[in-house]
Amino acid sequence: MSSPGYQVIARKWRPQTFDDVVGQDHVVRTLKNAIARGRIAHAYLFVGPRGTGKTSTARIFAKALNCTGGPKVDFDPKDPACVAIAEGSHLDVIEIDGASNNGVDQVRDLRDTARYAPAQGKYKIYIIDEVHMLSTAAFNALLKTLEEPPPHVKFVFATTEVQKVLPTILSRCQRFDLKPIPAELIVERLKHIAQAEKITASDAALACIARMADGGMRDAQSIFDQMISFCGNQIAEPDVLDVYGLVAADKVAELAAALAAGDHPKIVALVDECDANGRDLVRLLSDLQALVRTALLDAIAKGGRSEQLGGTPMTTEQLTRLLDGLREGEGGVKLGLAEKINFEVTLLKAVEASRARAIDSLIKELAALADEAPAPAAAADSEKKKD
Picture (cartoon, rainbow, N blue to C red):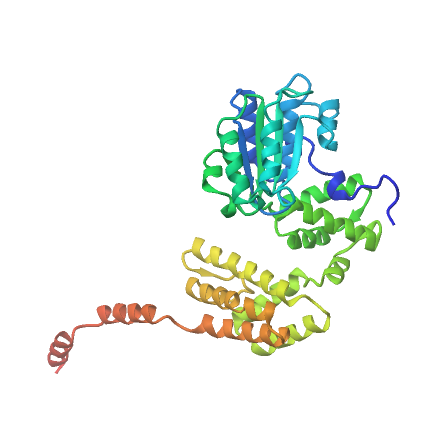
């Protein structure tokens, strides 16, 4: 049972100012410039995967607009208005969950209250999270207000599934795409949190957490919080691997090298080892794909060949076929009844695919050799001269 007043790390370390937002420099810069130049639009749409800062950025934007003496970029997060927005108690910053308030009646209520002047701040700001969950009728009820809102009203929408938002809504918003946060930035942020919380965590452990978070800062912080509960003040890589069933980075690299070399016995032995240790084979397949993709990009950059997978030289074509083979086996590994068998078959088929040659490339090579070979008549004349 948590102690009174305890906050999980994901909430305690939620970004409070623009400078706290990690990995979304393009969004922060645009919003800062809009505020500084007085070019504040009436509707914004933040799009991106979970945990990348959509709602946090919306709140920070609301603070910048409704802070004391605002709008201003360099607001004080301890300003009473900003504290009220962070706590969700500000009268003029209304946060709505689109999943549970998706009916036309709720949107009509919103439309009616939007006409009234703000009570505390300069603007009345509506933050609608998961806006794609609104019904078509609710979207249509919002259209007119969104197109011609009162001057004191600002809308900020957030969604993970922008394809479900009506085009008529999209055309009335300034859209910002938040991207997955790079692993190195997640590690850097986790190091900062660990230092502040007096937690000792190895670089390898933090790298594992970042790898598992898939670009989501909130996911990384939640995993880190769980590891603190499990380990206490000392977090090492084996702890993270055991709790989440991950495979160590060097073991993933060893398996990738075996794939590149076509070493079937070693592939089977490594899979047996990972399965015996209770590792997540679906996650291992994803990690392998990431390594092969890195090697493919390296081959493209170096003119068609890479030795990143254990030193075995592989062409762009081979790496492409290997990656495609791993990708094709995803469904069987995730949904199949025999996960280990499907995983082994996927790896072995990917190896065979990487060693096959495309017909068109063989034809090109044969054509090139034919062009270089001397013509039959010229060869016959040459033989006669010798005689």
